[in-house]
Every structure is written in C-alpha cells, then in structure tokens.
Length: 243
Image 1: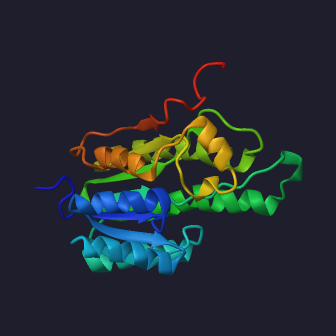
Image 2: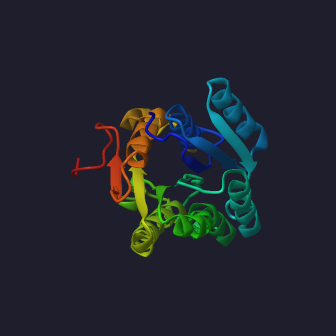
C-alpha cells in the first residue's frame, strides 16, 4: 500500500512551484488531492497531469485571503470526500522593499495571503478534523522566520507569525489527534525568485521536488507522531555562521 492511500489532501497555492510539486508527490503515494489556488487554468493543468498519471485530483479555484472563498473550498471538500486528512498551507507571496517606502496596502496584501490564509484554511480544516479525531496540517514557512533578509519586513513578519500560528494550532489540536508542523525552506526555485536569479544562483538553490520529498515524509508519519518544525536548505546557502 502507498504511504497516503485514499487520504484526502488539501494543498493551497497548488497551481505551481512547491504546491504543485507537493500535490504530485502526494498523488503518487495514493492521496486524493484537492488543489486550491487563484489561477483556474494553472490548477486544471496540474490536475490533468495528476489524473493522466493515474491519480485523483480535484481543482477548486480559491482565494485564501477571502473568508467566503475558503469556506466554500472546504464545503466542496466535505461534499466530495466527507473528510480531510491533510492540509498543506502553501499559498504565499513575497513582496518587500525599503521599509520607509512600503505602503500599508502592500503590507496587508502579504499578511492576508501568507498569514490570514493559513489561519482560515486551518480553522476550516479543524472543524472536519476534530470530528474525525485525527488530521495533519503542514505549514510552508521560510528560513526568513529564523533570519531575515534586508527590505523584507512584510514577508519576514508573516513567516515569523506563521511559526507562532503553527505552535498554537499544534497545542489546540493535540487533544483531537490533530498534528501541526511547519516546513521552513531555504532558497527554492519558484516564481518568488523572478528577477533575482543571480542572487539565488550565487547562494545555491533547491528544486520544489526536494521540498515535496520532505513534506511527504512529514505527511506519511503515523497518527500521533509529528514533526513540529523542519528547516531544509541548500548547504551552500549563507544561513549559518558569520561569513
């Protein structure tokens, strides 16, 4: 039997990058994957690739920063599958700049996707998982939660807050058999690096598939066992030490 046979997995930001890689990895291991993102066309493309390989995928156009949209997503999941075993909060954006030049709308946009979205999806998943007496949530954070870059106040703050949300949810879910953990990736080749490829290449990068393998290892753990936090990064990335 595959690791995730018949487990229903909801993955946000699943239209590309890390989210798409995780969805494909989960589907290969037998999960029924629900793909959520704003881009319907890209979602359908990922879903088609999964189904063509023999997997089961349902795409649901979703704006995780919109409460009604998230509620509709989980109503669809409950209607189609009657449960949710796994939630991967991957949807995120990275916008920054010099602090004195940042407008409040930019700050709120980053927070609404990276933090509000994770909260809303986790809240709706909790409602189903509590009744099931089990479930697992994996939040995709960033090493920025440990060490920020310059000119990254919105993104860095959202990822610090996501780590706090993870710990709070892990405590709240304990009595219901719900495990919650955060995966903190280093430089990963996704659209967030568009226009900054020189920096990424100089520091070293990973592929989304590398992250998907770690997410799969977390998801495949038996009930009652959790990885609270995992940091994964290229060994050449200047994260440790003073240089």
